[in-house]
Image 1 (tube, rainbow, N blue to C red):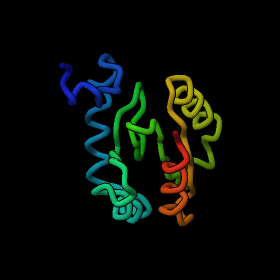
Image 2: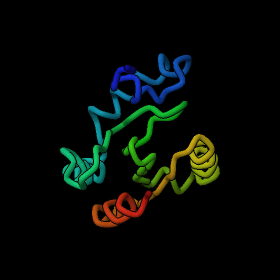
Image 3: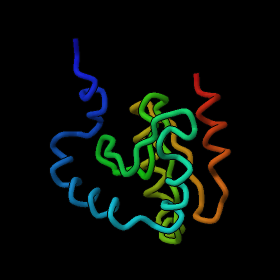
Length: 121
């Protein structure tokens, strides 16, 4: 029987060695919006296991529900200047089976995320 831990190895191993330090930094210094949202998403409060700053393929995503293949991104001001980069990132994640939903820092999102998770078959 395959180890459950193997189910969560979503990173490209060649890229992960370069991303693991960035991931640690992001975990240690979340934005205010990420901290607030994490309070509502952690410990299966939505009914689903959510991971924070999880590496998928070649990206560190803000939040991910691996069982539902849903990525949740919280976009701060920098994202206004990198729309094309974000669109490419979303396409890449879509191509490997993940749905990506994005919110701005100031949106109230916990209920929207719960609704989205419930609707995924």
